[in-house]
Image (cartoon, protein in one colour):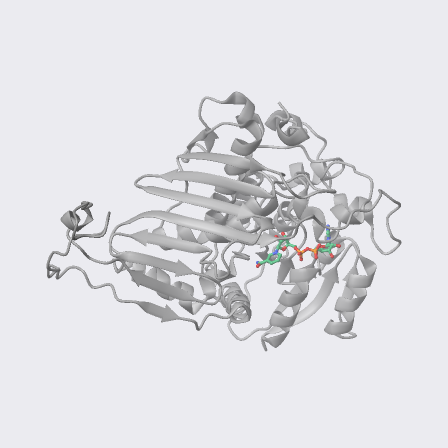
Length: 464
Ligand SMILES: NC(=O)c1ccc[n+]([C@@H]2O[C@H](COP(=O)([O-])OP(=O)(O)OC[C@H]3O[C@@H](n4cnc5c(N)ncnc54)[C@H](O)[C@@H]3O)[C@@H](O)[C@H]2O)c1
């Protein structure tokens, strides 16, 4: 079946990947070294686009970070980064050359989604710690390979869900964990914007000289170059991303898992499609996804062609005492009016407003202690900086960073399941222990996708 005219993922068996000839395997033994508390951490960057540049500037602020190298498939971006790093830094087209350097302790991977797993795993095998952007993976199995590889090589990996480092997000976690909202039964997550009719369209064309298009595509299927599917716009194609479900919902579902201590839904259903946007692009402009957790319902909605309410909460935890909404800048608690249930029995008499609550005396309820809170101290810039600092501290202490790899894999899995549900047109039930879709062989086959040669060989050499 081909929902929305999109080709289904090809399925690939574990055997066919492993049967491939193994290429030169990277050894970690000679490179692994523990950085002392007073040492500087020598950092290299892989991918220097929109967010990569932000990371470069944030690492540059840290006195114990020495920024020594950048690998970029786009030469103008590589040169711009080298200009920021100074004359002692080296630039590479191929990240494997950067990873070959024994004097680099850590790398920051800010490539498009289809290029997160390989550089992360190769870096771990080369004895380097990694800060890798969300969404962790392009498909479910990739995330588990990354976790296994980093665990095997004992590497520190921080994932770019930087909200966990934001003090107002931490305050939200504390409030909810201390029972301030009472029992949480649902969380609503959303992102609304209006980019209709869609981004400008271009014909397929030869790639610009400054971009190594084949390297940029890497393990993804071969496609003709088009500016509308390359820099930044990779987000709208199944080959290279999971659309806003993995781009934005990954952040929000991460908050749900982190704050409520969850690691996986037991069922996921999603509907939507590309209803409004024209031009290139495959991923839905309108999508709703429903995640079932024991005793909790989570709903994600994104709209790319309707801006909705002006001030969106983005994330809204609903509890029996009130609701807590979060954006990157604010935390707001709205207490529920605490009325006895009898007040909600509608009254249709002459002296009462139709459907209005009956005027009973308000009861004293000692367990009810939720007050209105408005905290607008959040700063997106600050969250990025703190996340970078946490990573550097963990590189030195060898402690687990705030956004650890296992939890990021679980979050990415939830997002991928939503996209699979949408594309297969049915609700999927998930076994979180075995990491398997139940009773659905067709959808299960899409938990894994093939890598294009020669990258399949590198993958095979890195799997542990
Ligand atoms: N944490 C956040 O809030 C946040 C914000 C924006 C983007 N992101 C994530 O960061 C990633 C990058 O997004 P972006 O908007 O910066 O994209 P972008 O297209 O602006 O930049 C990606 C860069 O990677 C380069 N690249 C591609 N393959 C490469 C390879 N194999 N080796 C070296 N360089 C390579 C490209 O040439 C490009 O310059 C995405 O996964 C995105 O989801 C996270």
